[in-house]
Amino acid sequence: MELEVTWGRAVRVWWAYLWRNLLAILAMVVAGAGMGFVVGLVLGTLGVPIKTIQGVATVIGGLLGLAISVVPVKLILGKDFGEFRLVLLANGARRRA
Image (cartoon, rainbow, N blue to C red; front, side, top):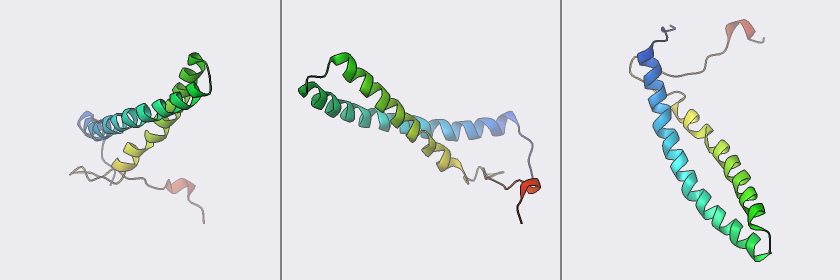
């Protein structure tokens, strides 16, 4: 049975996503700092200019951030929120035989 989308339910889903996303961001900051150090050290040793190193690190950090952002979504899919669960349902009008 489909429930009405209310502000209270929306906030519960948002909060479940938000705190997981904040933890993922924190983990990526720590991992990104280590990765940035290594990339900076290697590229600096090779004589690559600082601006180029910063650009490379920014792109790699952005891609890692995008990649990790799906983890909190995956974690809340199927989660039981008491009166409802967040699940994916097949669209009945588009089912294939």
